[in-house]
Structures are given as structure tokens and as C-alpha cells.
Image 1 (cartoon, rainbow, N blue to C red):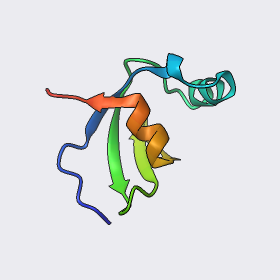
Image 2: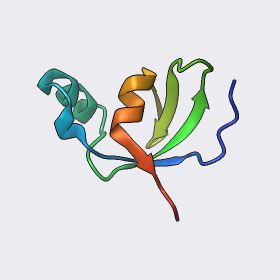
Image 3: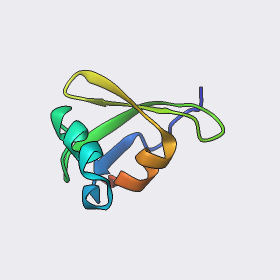
Image 4: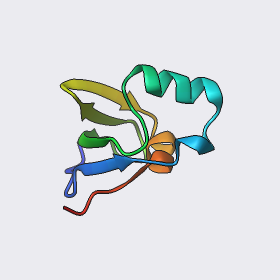
Length: 73
């Protein structure tokens, strides 16, 4: 498991994705502006596990990288 230093991220840029993907993310409660926590990031650009409202969601790295930005609080 890779240690995650800045584990807070903000969902953004969902408009870049295909409609079925956006629909599924919305079903999971993920919308633009939502703050999530990175729980686990696997090496070699493997899956990333995020947490939002006490649910954990696994995302492929390319999807994760394209829809999140750092949260500098």
C-alpha cells in the first residue's frame, strides 16, 4: 500500500466523462465539489480507494486522476 500524504481531494471535472460513468458516480453520491478522502492507493497506478460519507469506493487510477484535485485546507 502506498502511503497517502495529502489524502483529501475534491471531485471536479465530471463533465469530461461519458454520461453512463457520470450517472454511476452520481448514484454513489459523487458530484462536482464533493470532498473525499483517499484511503488507499495501490502502486503502479493501480486502483484508488476513496471514502465519502462512510462508504468506500474503488476507482481505476486514470478515472481518479481525471476527476480529483487536491484540497488545500
